[in-house]
Each structure stands twice: as structure tokens, then as C-alpha cells.
Length: 132
Picture (spheres, rainbow, N blue to C red):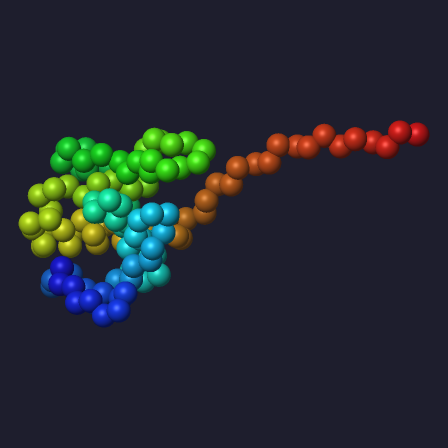
């Protein structure tokens, strides 16, 4: 992966594949990493996390990685994320393999965008009838 910073936007290319623009946005004390308008990674406390799904998590587990835990969450502090896992340490020194993992994370973000999300059903509210 080759990166070239230009004012908040990064031009990156996965070697032998295609090029795309990377963007970053500050969010919740960290930084979101975007490509093609989709968040596929984040940086928190200097650590990179990539988007995962149920098929990619075992690869992260084999690498000794762990899910992102946002310590400042209001409702559930310390709850591990189901969507982002820590980038394996060895990938910081292997840009070709990092590009493969980043490409997979972007594909997961694209797939997630296209899939319908199950929305939690609201509990029925009790309707009080006016007194006669």
C-alpha cells in the first residue's frame, strides 16, 4: 500500500490492483479511516483497527489480535466491538500483506452497506384510554 498525504485525504494504491482515495475523520476520540465513502478502519490511541465480519475474525484470532474496546462508551464501557479488530503487529512491517487485509476490510464495509440491517422492533407502548 502506498500512501501520499494531501490535507486530510490520502491517495493510496494496493500494489497490482486498483487505486482509491483514503480519507480520515476525527470521531469519538479516535480517527475513522474511509475509502469510497465507507469506514473500514479506525485509529484509537495510536492503534489501527480494521472492519471484520464473522468470516474474517478467525484470521485475527490466529494472529493474536483482539477486538476494539471503546473505554469511554456511555452505555457499555469496556464492551468489545463486533465490527473492528486490532491490526496484527506483523502487518506494520509488511505493506503488501497489509494491503490484502485492508482490502478485505473495505470489502466487508461494502458488503455491510449493501446488506439489509435488522432493526430492533420497538416495544409496544401502552395506550391509555381516556376515562369515560
